[in-house]
Image 1: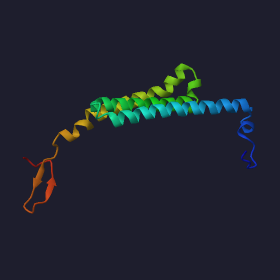
Image 2 (image 1 turned 180 degrees about the vertical axis):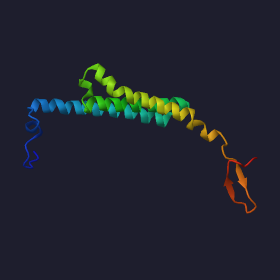
Image 3 (image 1 turned 90 degrees about the horizontal axis):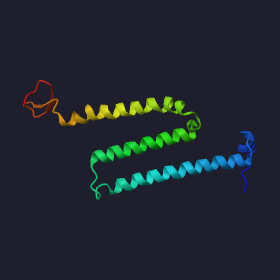
Length: 138
């Protein structure tokens, strides 16, 4: 059964023949199955991490890496960056990789230690209310 809405088919609008449309759909399904496979691996590792005694740092690196790989694959596939020359791929993806590495280091070096440091000791006044102040001493 064909959907008929008065608009020409995709192949005619894009000035492609039916074979080209089949190839486009084949690529879309290939990308879908690859991304589904990577996501299922992430889910498996996430569910089995405790029983496999995987460290927290390993899990963080593992999940961040696979997320970056999936994002880069989507950009290469659906934004047609995969069809470009290698230099253009790096011009587009390079700054994002540098930014991601910077954010990971920033979180690890500064925000990661925030909860370990008692920056503002608790000062209880006479009424029992708790006030956070930088002047309070233990």
